[in-house]
Length: 88
Image (cartoon, rainbow, N blue to C red; front, side, top):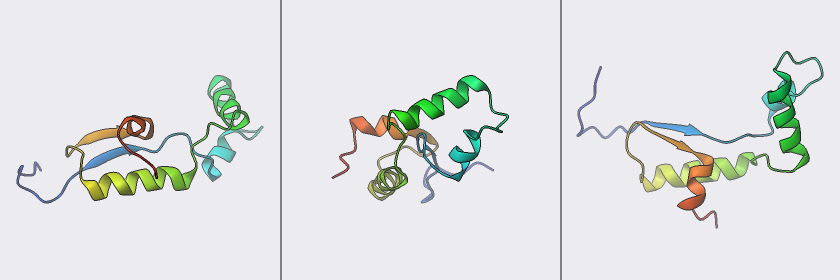
């Protein structure tokens, strides 16, 4: 069902970035059935300390939602916010 453009409800598709979570640990486990190239990407991300911290992505999401500076239905990636969100 389509909502009117006057609706107070806004929809956001947020991609939090690669996070170190239980899911990450399962994906990079030796027994994981994940594609070796994808697994290698995640293992390398951990080694290079480029995984996003859960608090960092949560803070960006909260700030974005509270500011309401996104178009309803938009897809916003954690890294897109590097250009517009100051984490301080």
